Image 1 (cartoon, rainbow, N blue to C red):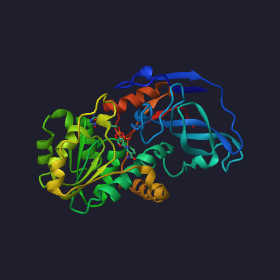
Image 2 (image 1 turned 90 degrees about the horizontal axis):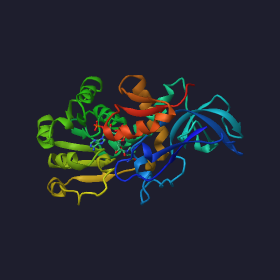
Image 3 (image 1 turned 180 degrees about the horizontal axis):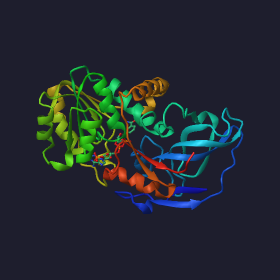
Image 4 (image 1 turned 30 degrees about the vertical axis):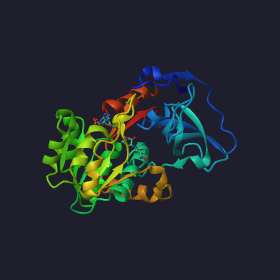
Length: 333
Ligand code: NDP
């Protein structure tokens, strides 16, 4: 049973030395637990936060501790849960070949509904984040202009499509020409901006959204967000979902720089955490499932093969190597 542990806390950007792959016994499921064989592992930007010692919304990992993440796996042994061998389940498990978990901490995944990997992407935590962040926080109305950053990623790609379904005009920022054509040609965004091709984000946005911005779904923060703030319309709403451009920063820049824009525009800025919507997860997953089935929502996955390559999958998030949801395929079903 291979298990990844936190080898040391990264300073600035994590690298391969942040991780250690160790060999451990396959764990025995205790009473009320099941043993799960990992099929897919999710790597997510928030995991960077768990690598630091300081305070954050996610509990820090200790040095030497096994890493955890979203897993879709197959039950191989049951010790008094509602599951039986062969069931496909999702849960917050280890970066490992095998994990144990208590029954209530596992969710059943229906392999006939959609590919099982979607339980970690469009029909899982990132899809739900996009769903609630767009509909409940950014709240674009029909005819509004909605801007999303990290637009070709797991959350951003779904957020833009949910806003389109609400009748908004959608503009996305992403980091390559390939990603921009994914947004415009595959997802139906009205415009994509390759932010790596311009220094003048403000001019690029003014061109793509000449009527200004009514709703902004922020996944990245930093200078792109500064530029979006200059283009907000009166009564604009900003949903602060993530700030990935700052996650590896050793020193944070002082202050949000464009707050004056919020005064003039009477804008509302609201941070949110997906956990707070937990009582409504099933409703969101059902709706997203219907949209995926009828083709209203398209999704993409970038799959790194092999548990041993999980660190590369994670590190690639900070280099923009993924289109859509970044997954690690650990084993075949
Ligand atoms: P993504 O699939 O979007 O992957 C991360 C992407 O971020 C990369 O592909 C890259 O795309 C972009 N990126 C990386 N560094 C930078 C940078 N310096 N400036 C601009 N863009 C950058 O990840 P997720 O969809 O899983 O997560 C998106 C955001 O949502 C993250 O900030 C995450 O922390 C947050 N989040 C928040 C939740 C909440 O409850 N509030 C829940 C889930 C996620 P590119 O090529 O475009 O640069």
